[in-house]
Length: 266
Image 1 (cartoon, rainbow, N blue to C red):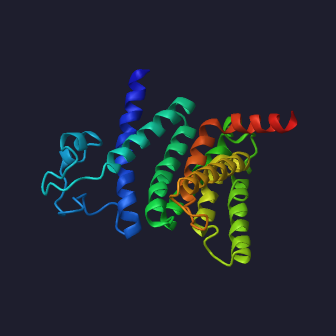
Image 2 (tube, helix red, strand yellow; image 1 turned 120 degrees about the vertical axis):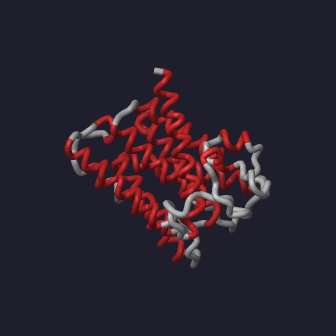
Image 3 (cartoon, rainbow, N blue to C red; image 1 turned 180 degrees about the vertical axis):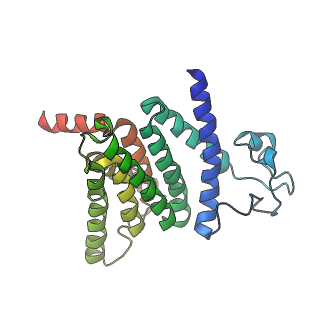
């Protein structure tokens, strides 16, 4: 069994390396296929030893072998975080279709997490890629319904997940623009991102993911204000909280939902 976890961890590291490519190239509208990876400082092409996830960073002591420029520690961090997510998903679902589907979605969302922090955008290309994967997952559910994933065996449950999250955030965006006369209340990228999240989770867990995202966003925003890092009128990227809320819901969604309803009915 340990061999499976080692394999999943290594797979996560490799995929995490690809996530770094997405984070760097997608906002710049560059191809994610060509040209081959190169140093962002000197432009020298990276060879195989330079591309081994995490270990190349350690062996090179965090510097480019050609120009000696420091390599951001975020590269190995992204690889390790992706590997950790894969292992947690594998522990929860085993090597199943839901594991493959959720690993695919989290690969895209991991890129969204850092792109939204860096550039305050959620690229349409990543949203469309997530939607395509969600439609494939929906097709699988039509053939082999899994009540453990969506809560029932109704074929339309994943499709119904398209509405709650995006609809709520769209309402927030509209009300924010009317009340505060600003378009910064909620970005349309966040609205669009919740659509594939709902397609993967179904309408029940989509609501849970949205609630967790809002809770995390509120807590972090409050902490940033109290620490003096942000002011009350400053905006905070909401995409990373959608990503975190989605992952939490993938793992503990049904437990959180059951706890909530037991709490309000107590």
